[in-house]
Length: 140
Image (cartoon, rainbow, N blue to C red; front, side, top):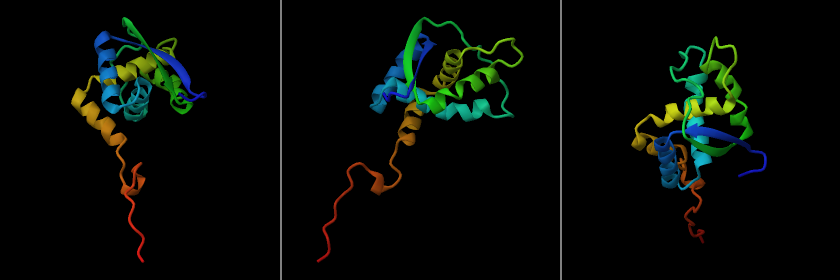
């Protein structure tokens, strides 16, 4: 966790929390990293001008609270997402409620597809970017 990250609490069901933790373990990261990756995956579609508003009710009550840390750049997008998810309502849901809605939409996908997507997001595309590049002997 970096000191400039934003702490948010998101409400999830037990099954959603379990899936999120399973994905984090499989990714060898923490839950916050998976949540950030989930937002990177779903935010473009949810914030698109021509995207229909989500049928998901923002702020749906769930029994489990999960605390996550997000980079400020992602956290700053949550108020816009909240407004997009609840057009016409007198008050937009909280950023935490918007985060929960986006995360629940992402978690509805096939778990194997989610795990594969996380692997793809963090794959090293070039051999030179691998953390342990192979060393070749110098030519004489």
